[in-house]
Image (tube, rainbow, N blue to C red; front, side, top):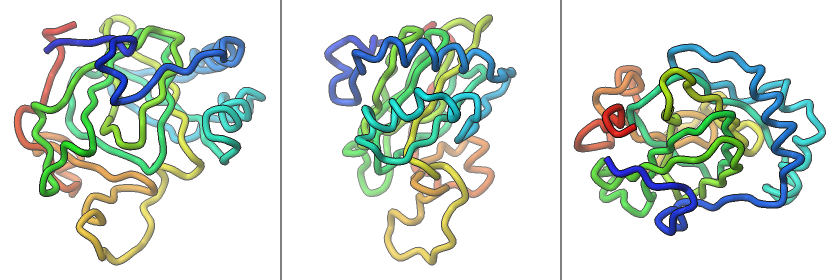
Length: 212
């Protein structure tokens, strides 16, 4: 699988690089490096080591225009797609190591289903603050170096990815709602599908292990 850079023109439809925040990034990376990392992928929506930094407010003000935000992390080792998700807002990612994002466009969903052939891979250098647009489908990062894995900060509006609201489904999109502000398309091979997530990814469950 071809792996583009987030600095390549191909990335422009999926997100952008945030500039001018070098001091903020340095403080966030120092705290992020202290978060735990195992072999499996783990996600924490809000991490006190990050949330209690003055730089949290910088992210709130300059990335979200003053909205309440949560700074969490997604750490571990991974090379597979498994699922794709989207939110109503952009997500901001920052890694202590180089990492890869598997991305697609929400507009590529046809009749509620996405063909995994539409997915593209983009690698982000360590220390680069990346915005992933709200209309970009994404999920857990992938590592570039199995010996290092990844530690990636995940900035989102407050309460995103927390408990799913207790609502009766009304729209077809409600079938994808997996958590608060989180709509999920699962591949049949994923653990999320076994937990009841809607199977809406058709095609190969992409694995980039041979491409890195």
